[in-house]
Image (cartoon, rainbow, N blue to C red; front, top):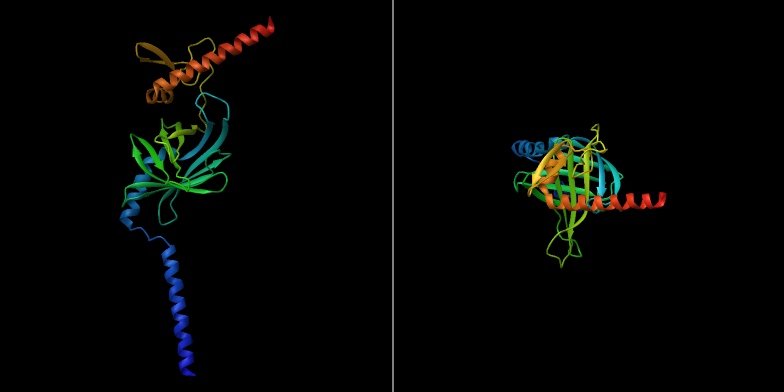
Length: 255
């Protein structure tokens, strides 16, 4: 009888030890105080993102086809062992929620994202030229996804979504969301005044490029122009072309 009881106790102990070991494997190792401080310092680089934002999403820059509006908010998450920034999107087309963390050991950022359909996708990356560039591992089809966060200033942020197929060499644009901090007034629509080359709003300052002068409505548009002047100019020409066509159609209809 004693042998049987001892065997049962031994088996129970082994099972309990196995359960504890399995649970320990599932739990991430706690960060040291030094690493936690380093992770928080790295995330503080993005303090300008904290708060609420109004977003305008576009599949193609300058086109309203497939465009959408969304609300987003960045908040600190400091109660857990690992500091993080949480990103929550309302009516988002590309993301639903996400958590941004930093690993001092690998010196890289990780974005754990939940997509609008509930699927999950992780991205890893670093800061490149003041932009946070995050890339996912290839999925079952060999597709790689990339997110680029560009902070134009305290009031404007761009988030670019791209992907690259298994047989493709370059990333292609999926969509881009331009965020304006909540509580910030949008540029006024120009009426007889020079128009901003970026938004079409009222131009209040100028910038020279290849011998020509262009108008801008704010510092955010200036940085956007400097980031991609040829793309901005091409979009503005297309916008002007459509505006003239619409005006001509209206004049013809009223004649």
